Structure formats: C-alpha cells, structure tokens
Image (cartoon, rainbow, N blue to C red):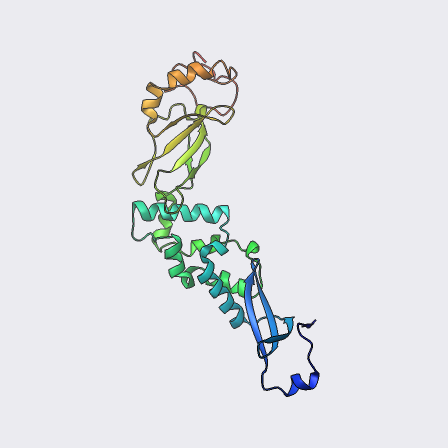
Length: 263
C-alpha cells in the first residue's frame, strides 16, 4: 500500500518535471528492505515497500558489509570453532593456512561468502544463515585433508572419551585448551601437543570446577596432585583419588576402580 507523505494536487504532481520515482534498498534488522520512493523535488510524496531485484539487493548487501564489517553476520558455534582452528594454524604454521581475521576475510569476501550474501540479497534473514559452509571454503586444498591431523577438534583421554579442544579466538595468542575431569586423565603422563604447542589442561573436580591448570601433566602428577588429592578426597569420597595416578585406571564413574589404592 502506498503511504502518502505529502498531499499535493494531482495535476501539479503529474505535470511537474521534478516528479521522480526511485527504488532504495537498505539492510535493516538483518534483512534487505526495498522501498519505492515517489518524490517531487525534495518533497517525499509516497513510500511503497517493493521486492528488490538481485542486482539491487546485492548492492545493498555489499554496502552493508563494507559499512558494518563481519559484525553484520553471526558465526554459528561450529563455524566459529572451525575459524579458530584455521586461525591457530595460520599463526603456528602459516602458509598454506590462510589468515582469517576480519580484515583478511573482508578483503576476499567474494571468494568465500558470495553464496550466503546472495541469499541475503534475495531476502533471507541473517539469522537463518549458517556460515559453516562459508568458512569451509577458506580451507586450502589439498592440505585441507590434514586439518584433523594438525588441529584436531577433539583429543582422546585415557577414560576412552574424546574431549573438545577449544582454540584461541581469532587474533588471540595462547594455547589450545581442553576441560576434562581429573579422574579421566589418570595414566596420561605426557601432555599432548598440537603442531608443537602444549595443550593446556583444565582439570576438573567431579562437580565440573577447575582444580588445576597445567600444560605439563608429568609435573602435575608428581607434584601438585598430592595437594589436590588431600583437598578433594574428603569432599568427593565416592570418586577415586589414588595415591598413584600414574597406573590407576582412568574413569568417568563415581565408584572406585578395582585395585586402586588410597582413594
């Protein structure tokens, strides 16, 4: 429906050389909005919502990307995790793993983001986009086949479980981090490394709270573990706190492993 902004005599409007119709496109609240604006000089006569063509929508999305940067988009947890892994490999290994900071990605958006921006140009909401496929386009080929080897998404622990690796944020320093219950790591004497960087272990109590942070498990078991054991065994008596963590079976359960001592 046309909304009249200013009421003028019809004859004046029809015959004026200043009468102009134009279509505008804006990216508002995560979605492309098209409007047909009829004006007489500087006077807006009417504004009508319209469906945009692909070219008009694409131009509006590109302008929004240039203006707002990647902040106009939302990376899903999976897309963010993959982007972090790529950033870590670029930091530690460099070529062929690409830079994935905002400036680098904005400089080459046509190479990895074009299909998603086309969907926005056609009217889809930002909230419906999952950028995981877009981030996957950043993987270098054929080296992409080594991603899991070089920067695994998960690491195995002695309990038999695989735990998620949290990589540093894009542009941040620091090591990869895993959070895992202490009892699941009994017998793990050598701290894992990812492309040469020691993994930082956040060892958790049975309640899921950190009781130790270390990237040197051998030193922890032979040193600070004794104090952790003394403090925790009375608080969590149903969980194993053996004197010898080197040979005690790792466990996820609450019952003491058979044969453990001093739990």
